[in-house]
Length: 279
Ligand code: PAF
Image (cartoon, rainbow, N blue to C red; front, side, top):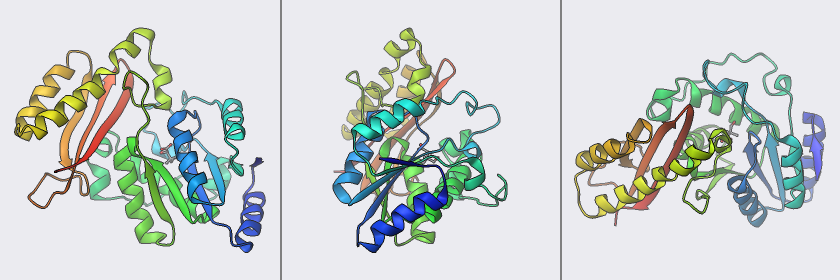
């Protein structure tokens, strides 16, 4: 595995693969790699001839009082994991390569980026789209792979890709969980031992809500009920049962349901979701 720190070095490797007709899968990350990321790498390896992973902690997707400065930097460990998983190239760009004109941008994601996580983290998805667009311009992959744990992010990126990069296929992988059900996340490193015991209750609440929904409990009743239960352990940011394709209220045309939530456990923000067919 070669680590590329410049655009030139990365593109020359990719150009030579492409000239041999090889297909390239791209897995963008912010490092702090865990089994969730490795499942994206596994899908990339299955679908393409060559796999590129990037590690770049993108400042423009963090709000002013968020954890940009503390975000885990585990590059050595990440490199060892990626080597073990035999990817073809790691790209670790500098901030100047990604943002040669500075961090300001006029990208506005619009409706789907303004609700849920976008409402609590204004500008977050504008920053995500800004960096993913730039990475797509540099890497020009055939496909890019994202986790369903960040379900709203996945929809926002799929929408952006359909508009600006229709040639790039956006693929996703289901959330990978700890044995106790907690969705894997780089930010789980922030949890104390006691908080780690409480955190899996979020997934239990999602499962219970899915069951209640399938038992025909009205959405308003079940969301109020689950918010009450969760508020004993967490500060609930949002808990919503929505149409999974539009992230709007469920209608007769809804075919897939998304139960999405964000909570604070101490100062750590956890997000999770369950997606299932309406049946
Ligand atoms: O999901 C992430 O790790 C990041 O939001 C992404 C997609 C790599 C953009 O910085």
